[in-house]
Length: 358
Ligand SMILES: [Zn+2]
Ligand SMILES: [Zn+2]
Image 1 (cartoon, rainbow, N blue to C red):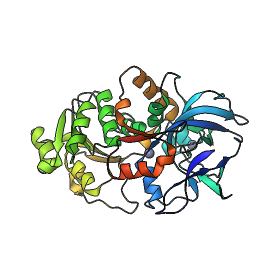
Image 2: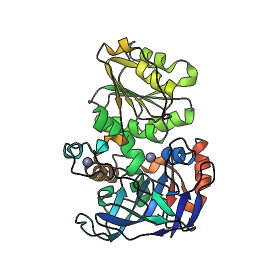
Image 3: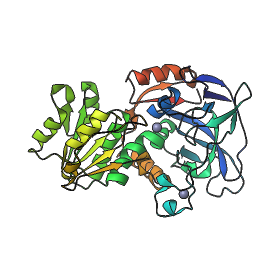
Image 4: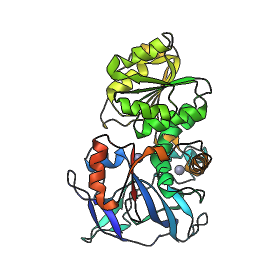
């Protein structure tokens, strides 16, 4: 079967004929129908985050359960599923209290694939969605309603849960509160629509690209802040009577934006860092500014509880309360994966989606 394999940093991804083994105890094999391209894929490929190689890339995807391994009782052949990158154990103290993003027993990378050259290939982020078939733990394959189209379902598994989850699960934004979103790419747009779902009173969208700000308005931003027209912190403060916002989200992973987001907080406000800067990055902030009950939160994968959140998000989409169609900038065949990566790096994509059946 066809899959996109990452062999060497700095080299194009290779679309090649890859073998995949049968599902073992507690696993399922999924026929991927659609997969989204995410910045984290590119960060692995360009060496920003070291990852074992060769690896079958992709971590955002949806498909149909094609084979079920021994001991799996929650899934059947033919079930539509969205893949989760967690593969949490479901039994440790963190999983038990509904916090699987900090599971005590995260799975070690496995090698369910064999490349065209006969090498064992790793799965990426417990998913490997840039493949016609993948093998994952059953806890990573989350059933969703049959009515949802596969490209839209795919995006729930990373872009949507990361953004919406940061608002609903991590920050727990209250109705009527104010928030600012620094960076309105694919993740930032989902933070904005998380704010809409939470009933935020004002949602500031901060970016440097006018076209992105207009898109942000369509996702529910109430105030647009163009960073090229002066200090965005000052613009947010001016618009809030000098006070600042109750919640600020940084959705790019730029140190300057993280610092600006923190500086835009009102007393009692909370910064949520959603973007992922380089592994050794350090930010600078005035410790004394925490004194008025300000806080800084990290957020992994939207602090997701996939079994609860994914079907809920699919249902919100089907009821017209969550925008996904508008996030999909372009469709590709997997053979064009390197072309799609170039488009993403040029900032042209909110989301590019691979049709794995094309
Ligand atoms: Zn991702
Ligand atoms: Zn666990």
